[in-house]
Length: 93
Image 1: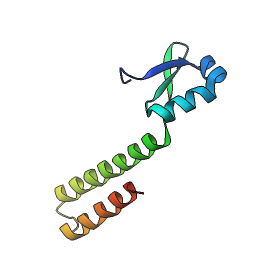
Image 2: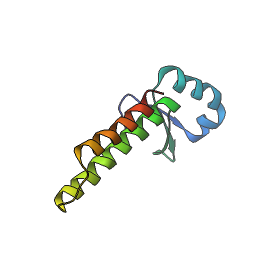
Image 3: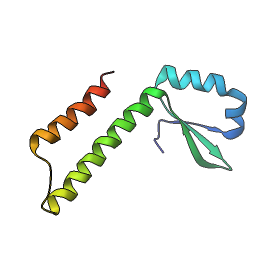
């Protein structure tokens, strides 16, 4: 759990949902939801969620490329760069 992340109980989330969502959106900082004293979920703004999804997609593509290289297969550099351009183009939207 990030040290800077705010932490609230599930009960607090139920009582203050609107305020917490506005705060997450305004500050672009996650809120960790705890249940029985343990982290159980994270509330993040849509920008952070989309950013994480794009980063995950890039990492998955890199991992796939590594596996292909080890297996003696793989796409051409042009194909890889075209795929990266597609991901980056979605990032700019």
